Image (cartoon, rainbow, N blue to C red; front, side, top):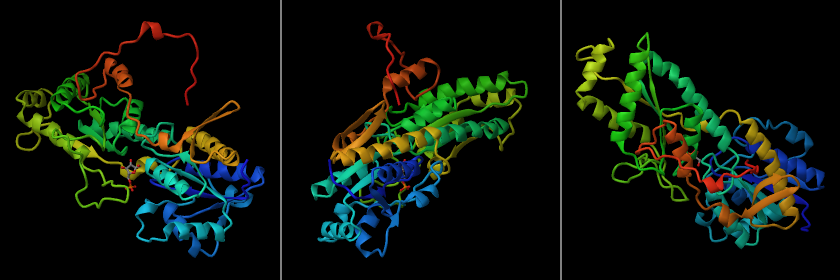
Length: 404
Ligand code: F6P
């Protein structure tokens, strides 16, 4: 067992749901184990500048009771700073001086793949750390706090947008965060019964999307007694163009982890659909049949893109993330006490704490396309020729497998 008297708590990378529960889980478990915990502000920027602080916030019972676990974001604050890139040859010594100044023996750091890579870096410099998985992108090997909250918010926004889509008979394209993978677009889209979901894992064939849209949307409006209908596409920000390129915000700089701000996926999808609507001779007929056609003003259905952006990771955390966050925070304290440095909490199930080396957990996990095919078989378009879901007879099992 490690003799730890004080833990520093860091949250890093993009904020999201469930992080305040992680902080509370750490603080409360530490307290019951006779260990103090303190919040290091502003993620890794704060760790680097710790030595300059006059005091750190002690996460005692009174302070922790003022943190609302159901609020998204983090009471400890965030930054996207990669320690190894700081232009200061003495940066690691400076960090150690800060830790010494506040008698911090070890760190619990909550973050995603970029944050995890810094955890590994800090450990190589002799700073003991345990990692709690956090990212709304869900691209780690284990479940990460924040994913469920983001999925639920995407589902709610998407579902709510149907009322305006229906009122105007618009085709809506909702672009959502998720970086280079499509987990949140996929799950959130299914949660809202989106008609089409486009994810980076599947190269998009826009002719297929257009045909699906036309069949679904046109029929929906023609079936309706008030001639009302919408067509909803949820698109992950990380989809690639026909040339295989990611869509960036051209004005954004490359950050310390090599990322540029993704932007434009929704616009790209809108343009692809508009182009096909304009050149399709059947569209004018449809507009006339349904009483919408107005020469020179309203000749094709409108396509709008909507970008909820940071809203998908703001506001409130889902109950699941509060549950997971509390448990993962407590589990991180157990791992630290047991000297399981350099590991990431995976879960607590029964009396067992599951963990994995951080270097393994941060390897990118993509959407499972077999699972996608279940929903394709049920009618959702994923921008490719639908693949039929085939089950394996030999794999139909009678036992219960636990899932998070
Ligand atoms: O990694 C989490 C995430 O929300 C991504 O989905 C998104 O691309 C990115 O962060 C946005 O980062 P920032 O808040 O720094 O603009």
